[in-house]
Length: 415
Ligand SMILES: Cc1ncc(COP(=O)(O)O)c(C=O)c1O
Image (cartoon, rainbow, N blue to C red; front, side):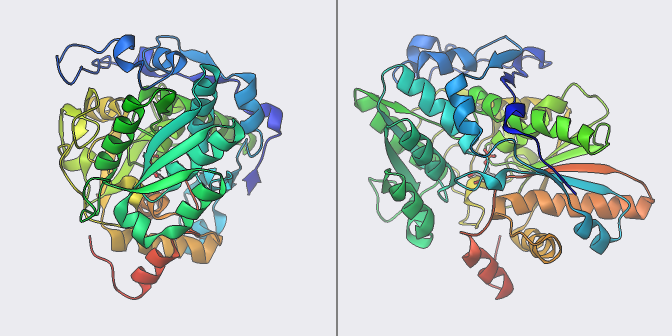
């Protein structure tokens, strides 16, 4: 039911899907000139190695040894077959999940936090500024910064800062500093877009500080491909060929990309993005150039977007409250290679509770979106009497999101 691999099986190269995308990605544009951005435009915010990865046309990029040494603290993560959920659903489908909740921060986010901290430190940067929603990314970056002896300043969406103190405490335990965002307007609950504006402004205005983004950009999805690369090997260990469908929740697209990108070339494998109905970027947004942040400081990215001023309702899946999506994910959806579905919160938590009561572990609200889609795929397979192999990303645990479960059980959810 559970396939683990030894530490020497952590992938030693990341898979870069960008050179194989059809049509190719459109370039990011400078917010002022609207011309394609060059490395010099990005240099105040990112180290050159990451800028190089952002535009690389190499299909494989080596993982530095120092990064592998840290990833091996918890990787490879287990591949688990959810047999008890299968039985409870009475489905002929075989359901597997890649368990990213076993990382120190409890999600997939450290997979990119560690290399981002490493490359910055290697170029002499000793302070990172970032944004965080419910705190998953901020805690992952604080963890990584601690391992490379760097300072970390986290702008946390105010609604989460006020309601969910535990990840703030994790960040502080790892030595990071947290402030509620938007800094300029304490009356606002905030959004990921406005917290990005605060963090970018911090990094742009201070020597020795760079900005780190937890999703959306090409290099972030690149770092996350360890998830899908390991999963492919583990499925083979489990005696499976390719999966029929691979499913992941989608905020900015990093865990979804990490799991699915190694399967893009496998034409028969369906890829499915799952998002909240209240922030339906892929299913109801428009494909356009838009800013990554609210204020308009970042380059314009070609992506599905609800508009950079869109402030999503305060649903519990804080990590899915983003107005845009990774250009890579947007490209795959636009070209028809990836499907997208959206679910309201109550349907999501219904599936999450079903999962917890069969498999035992309590998933993050973000992850629960994927689980909702998995349950529906498994029930469709039952209806059709079809054997089907489903792989999904268990992007994080929900042990610091229990108030969300309390709200669900006491009928306090909307959206
Ligand atoms: C557990 C978990 N899953 C998913 C996400 C969504 O982000 P992404 O789409 O970049 O994977 C987040 C973001 O914070 C998260 O914490």
